[in-house]
Image (cartoon, rainbow, N blue to C red; front, top):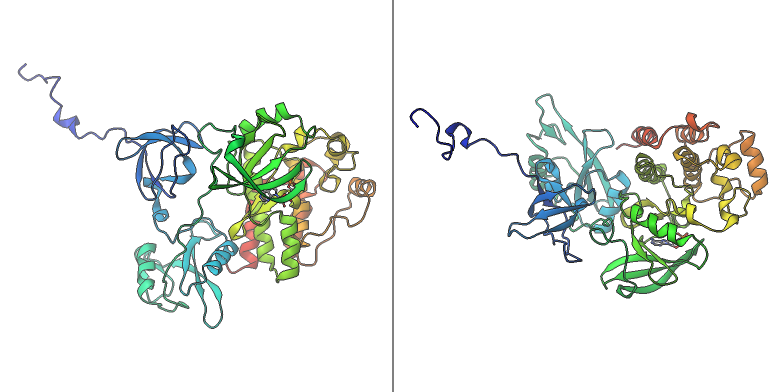
Length: 465
Ligand code: AMP
């Protein structure tokens, strides 16, 4: 075929044409396969993504060609890895959580780099024992040559170079950078394995009682002897079980750092168990009351708790999921001062009229806006009203809203537009946000998405980030 191309020889022009690239991810945490069909992950190893059509569980291939499902929140796409490949980078961690993490490590020169609350900037948080144990926060600044620095005399082309420099020279910092907290706890997975929401009762070991609530007793447990879980043992006849079991399939898929993860249910035997992520410090309400008695609490810490709840709620809002019973008693606190929203959506399955009807004695009247009191009309905006009350609970360290007022008196006040007074600990900007949450008309209340920005902006102005 003179002059013509032989179809079987590659055209030299296209030989090097880039193939549509496979998505390659790097494991941020170790993961042990739990079911056949899962694949184990080794931290820092690369995997090729075969199927990422589901949000929470992706099918990947390892270097040996083994394939299986892995939790998508355990990996990060290689090309987006950026600073995440470094042990010292902790992403969106707040000032307070970084402080509790570093204090817990208690090592001179222990540090992390985190995203500053001003988008695009970074903060170095450093622990030193001199002259007394404390954490110092430094903004990583950029000069007009786009170089990074902590002290103007020592500029570097990249943040990793800067960190490396200060590992060898304190260069004006309170200490040389020595170590960073390694092996941070892996996050909860959306369900205990891919497409798994039914949990075998025999694989749960039940341990001590953690508390009890509307549905019955909650106990700590271990799944397959190793994974910490909380087990809600549902009292008979307290909920419409079949409807809830259906819903649990959807709820296990909701996954966010500030939501208590639902792992699944044991529905084959009675009583049914709801199995969730275990949160070491229990209810936010009790935790606030404990903190008030046992240590001085700063506005910053309280604001940080509100921001965390707001982030979890913003995720629910984005997924059109209404909580219906948001309150400090329904949030939980875990290690590193992390706060997560629990029990979202459960209220719909409660059978007790006293809880579900706005005239009932167990109905959360004090967290309810006018449209819920009048027409039982729930929406993300009724959650926003409840969030304002939760902020009030946080800033009063767990006081009862409206004190000893009876429910009927509270309803009268709310209908008249009378709102909770400003807590002593709270600045006027924070109280202004609560007031916006308590706007009479739902459409006048801000969304959770907007609230996050407003709360972060206050946090930047009252704190040296
Ligand atoms: P509830 O039935 O959700 O109101 O839970 C009752 C109490 O059990 C809470 O106030 C907590 O003290 C405790 N509890 C519930 N869920 C968990 C969990 N996931 N981790 C730790 N403690 C929990």
